[in-house]
Length: 178
Ligand code: C2E
Ligand code: C2E
Image (cartoon, rainbow, N blue to C red; front, side):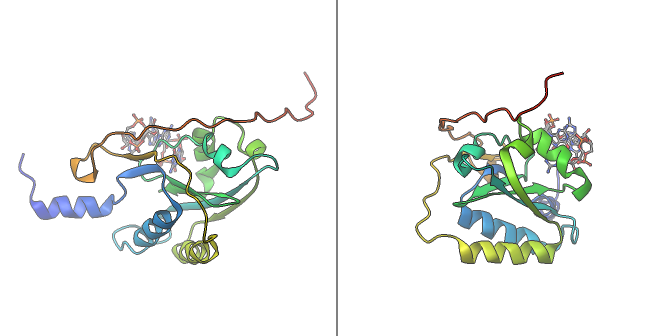
């Protein structure tokens, strides 16, 4: 059926992120600012920005290999010390559910510290902070696993190959056996 061109433009503007997964730090920040300024998306309910600091001994790049993003619009980036996730349309109450879907290991065993922002102004302020504090010589990880949808306008639709990383498994904490 014929759909008027302006309806397509509107639909695209309302679902702006035809991508998911890892994106490099500068583009992550630009994408987030564009998203926060999209007047078609609900105010203060666009999603959650979460900063996660890995437990001592685990590098952020290693933590990235444990992060399996599934939903379109969910994004992740890294800097020297932390992983930053954006969970599209996720409510604050659902944060733990979403993190359980995304990480195969218990999140508290992988990350020792977490910060969450959910209001547009808070997210914008944190993104500005990220843009200012990023180390100038930070080398992006060689994992170009930006997943695009099959929308032909959004790219080839092909998945870039993922580069495997060695991971040191965490030692089990001193739990009592049943
Ligand atoms: P999507 O939103 O990009 O999600 C991709 C896949 O991530 C889903 O594949 C599912 O395996 C997982 N996923 C995403 N969000 C959730 C969630 O809140 N809970 C659970 N349990 N899994 C989630 P799936 O199920 O094959 O869906 C494919 C696409 O169909 C989704 O892409 C979405 O566009 C649409 N869809 C499916 N079910 C729903 C729904 O209940 N509500 C909405 N709004 N869209 C849905
Ligand atoms: P659920 O799987 O228990 O997820 C509850 C809520 O957690 C979701 O509410 C969403 O806000 C958040 N959430 C869960 N997984 C993800 C994720 O991978 N990414 C993000 N950004 N948020 C996530 P929502 O969207 O209202 O969905 C309500 C329920 O509808 C879900 O409960 C699930 O049962 C179903 N659902 C929604 N989307 C999908 C989908 O794409 N596929 C399937 N199979 N089920 C879906």
